[in-house]
Length: 254
Ligand code: 13P
View 1 (cartoon, rainbow, N blue to C red):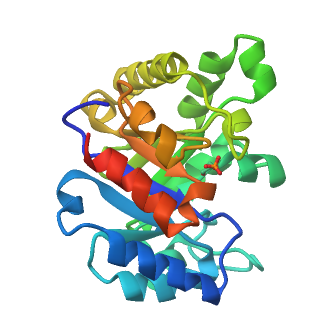
View 2 (cartoon, protein in one colour):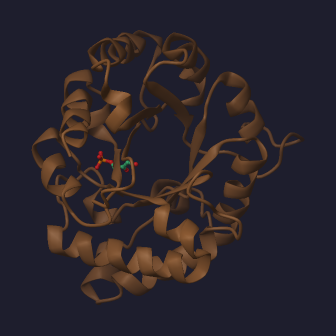
């Protein structure tokens, strides 16, 4: 991990969470050590139905609340969609865009993702832009070129370390219990850093690069120690307070 960049550990609850699950969030907030915010930023990206309630509960404390997707427009005739402005209004401070599940389930392209990132900025939200190769692409030796192409197409001009976070999530590692080797993560994050610095200069050098895909308390320490890994995007393990707190603990000890 780059020593000068404060890590972000963000949980992605995906399409999980009823009102009854708010108790798990309260347990997380209660379990966060008072000094955590000095060493690591924590966030839960909740389903839209829970954002307002969780954000109210989190207040201005150590846990931020984010959304999982937004429409590119601020408002209009888009039944069922949610805008970045609505997420901000509900209390979110960030939004995930371009998660591989949205790219696969909803056919989102790099240019769709770029427009959503710009929408996030327009609403004052941090855009957490996801990239990552499939298993077939990795086996073909194309992982780095695929991710470089996604970065080029999905990250808008004007991205800064303040308005953008990048999350590398190899599709084959999501929800499978599989993770790349530390060496493979290091190679990918180095390539991403070089691409971002090449395009955005200093902003690319200080932008947070998260790793996501089967992060658990047991492997968080090893992943955190990898050069250019500045945090984690956590799926399944963010649904349980004990697991998420365990991951936060690993990052806070970095
Ligand atoms: P898992 O941690 O469940 O593998 O999910 C990762 C992810 O997709 C986070 O966005």
